[in-house]
Image: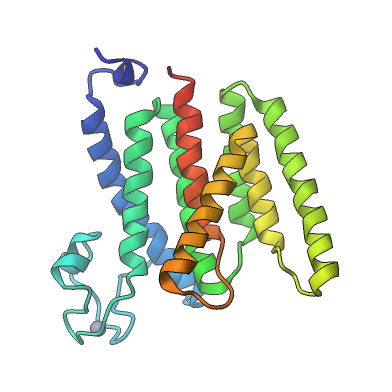
Length: 253
Ligand SMILES: [Zn+2]
């Protein structure tokens, strides 16, 4: 039995099978989270109803709703009106598969579930940030709760709490200085709360997460020649999840 599988609740299932199982479940949940989040940001009342084309409003057949697969088969276009489907659906589903696939294969079941919930909260926050430049408090609170749970399970609850408080104070001071110097809100309130909540999970490793997020945003700006405001939430989410998986697996060695 390998060291990787021996710590799982279901030790006889090899890591690649757990990864595949996690990825498939992650695709489905990722699709659900992406759909409901996008509908809510557009102010649609029917969050859980049958999926329709965003353009012609034709209800989708089951074969048009298979996560990632339908998008690829249809060339990213609606079968009825041939209008391009927003690729955010594809990437939301992909992110769900990666998060749950990795956590299911690398972590014991309780931690895998907690990281999964955290990952889907971060996915919803990223999608909302991309569309509205907002990070809603209830989702940030969800990140805070599961970050706290994971650090307590790791036995680092006290130290992580200090890191979260430290990050919050430093960022608030930075926000104050930037606002005094430039006269504009250069650091969003939501970003500060989310970074502090993630510091509760990552402890001292939060520096790696912020560095990865900043590097990712910089590469994105250079490659796409992006002008204007950029949503930092998706970069923060990706950097934190990557760092978090390393932090969580380190205790298994
Ligand atoms: Zn259509």
